[in-house]
Length: 305
Ligand SMILES: O=C(O)[C@H](O)COP(=O)(O)O
Image 1 (cartoon, rainbow, N blue to C red):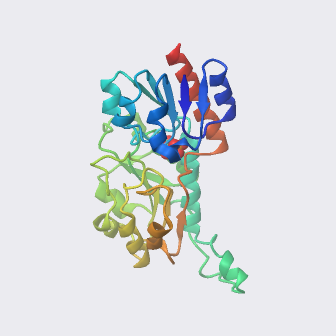
Image 2: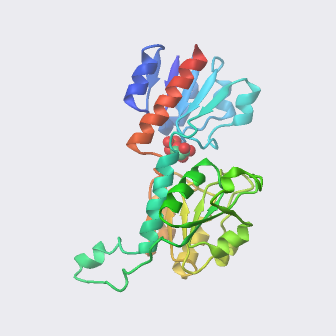
């Protein structure tokens, strides 16, 4: 039996249903405490990022063989507990790479251009041409913190637009071919050089608040920051202060320490200019949903057979 706790493309759900009894309840992640009560007999659990696959949940799942993750971030899954029980965890590696890369490039263009949020002022009768004459990305520097597959794809698009690519990634050897067309630098040098700084690290104890007040202060005053990685990688309160005080010129945030972002938590961003907020959709497009769902359905069927 298969249990799916968050949204998945319909064709892939039907494919699973054709082979195994499958419960598809895309709102189940909002009723987390119900999930353990449903786990007896479940061999495959399919989740996105909101379902917490904890040790307690696994203890209630004696038949579980595989967890399919409709995405790539694994911080909502207790990987050690899965490993200890021989439960395989399958991420949709590669299937949403392009969605995130396009999200980052779009925000780089919008934030540097600084023109697309003029609608309210224009509706109020203003014609703010000077305020809206922003910058081109051509010839400017994009700096990646973490240079895995998603950052590398973003770099490919950035180079096509004439941007220079620099990155900090201590996990990659200096002679790795990924450095063709990108310059490897210490974190501090990326922070002080880049016009656009984009985060591409998982959330771990080492990367938590890797962008904090001290590191924001090292950035150029005309730099913009994009976080489509994980909430908590950036200290959002420090970022809001840096924006308010003009230490940096703009930011796009797709991920937050607590998701969904509550109205109360969002107050730190109230009134800030050149700030784009999106609800954790960098990796989610109609196209990537089809790819991610098909990949996980196929892997889960393969594993169960
Ligand atoms: O980890 C990911 O791939 C992204 O966060 C998207 O995941 P989601 O589809 O679960 O939102």
